[in-house]
Length: 163
Image 1: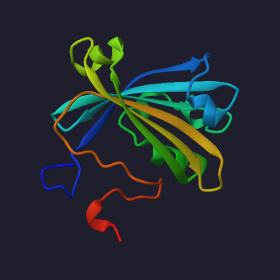
Image 2 (image 1 turned 45 degrees about the vertical axis):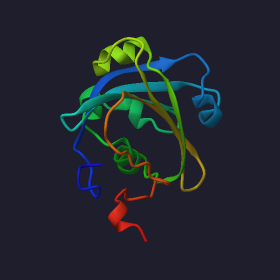
Image 3 (image 1 turned 180 degrees about the vertical axis):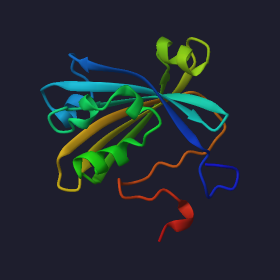
């Protein structure tokens, strides 16, 4: 949240990589077995800090993430991509937050010392019809900002607009 507490700092995403994942992980809980793609991005939060986001998808469910060129994944909101290209609205999101030592590659990408402790946010998402859509994880270094974690995919995100 920005200093007012009613708006967000600007967020800019930078595409880092796209690769097929051959190992099992927390994404398997939602996405199941099959071909899994992981897209990694560096998120610039205002001019204050960076975090790493990794989204895991099944290309047979969301082929757009396998088909779009990398430049089209740079700077885009993935929920918007899912809606525009797959006609899928995010219905339910389950989120889990833990405190952990940031992986060494993440620490380097976000500009903190190796061994730094940060937050690990995991988000499991389903369509409004119940189709598993993605698993996303965020590695968040220490910072002084309040974070808003929407309760569903339909949440507009602004506290001022809450009922």
